[in-house]
Image (cartoon, rainbow, N blue to C red):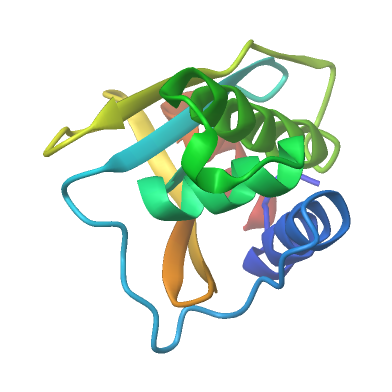
Length: 160
């Protein structure tokens, strides 16, 4: 399979949030997008037969809630390093599950995480093939899959 369906991404992400974190993941309706301040973005790169990246963007508040569930600690006591570790692991789990839906063989990088205020995140030369939003408790999470131009073109030519 070369094309990812949004429904496939929903299933992958729902499993991570409900099974691993015990948090209910809902559709984005009525949620607030991650603010321009206090935002975290984690990504993993895929290389091989399919090349691109998977990124997860969310507010620091939701990152604290997820990390608290992951580490079984009060969210207010977690350090930024622990937030990065948890969100990096969520991106890694999502990337690994998405990798299984794509042509192989391919390899997954270690996660990278950026946090802060008013930052931009882009993948020059990449093509966004999926951009799906979810929410937990009113806070939105964005899951984005970006393909290299070659991988995106191969998906289109094989679909048509």
